[in-house]
Length: 121
Image (cartoon, rainbow, N blue to C red):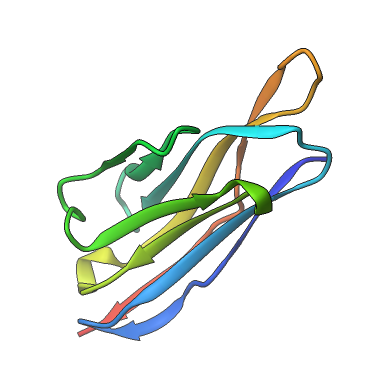
């Protein structure tokens, strides 16, 4: 069984910082693209940040300059450093990754269970 285990969510004051982690577990050979998504109540799920296997990154306009996505391939983990947090950042954050699970290079797309981030005014 391959899974993505998320951690780091919680309640913080506006202007504060938080770091989310997402680790792949199970029999995984490697990880391709990884990303963070978020979904607020009554809102659509949106892409927050993504990072390729080569380290190229992409961010939603709403978080540029405040959030940083990174990965540690040795630990099969992706991080999301969130600074200058705003109330509108409040949402459930989900990680997503393509996990290579076969010698031939076959992969499966997996979602994390989600971690709640709440920003108070």
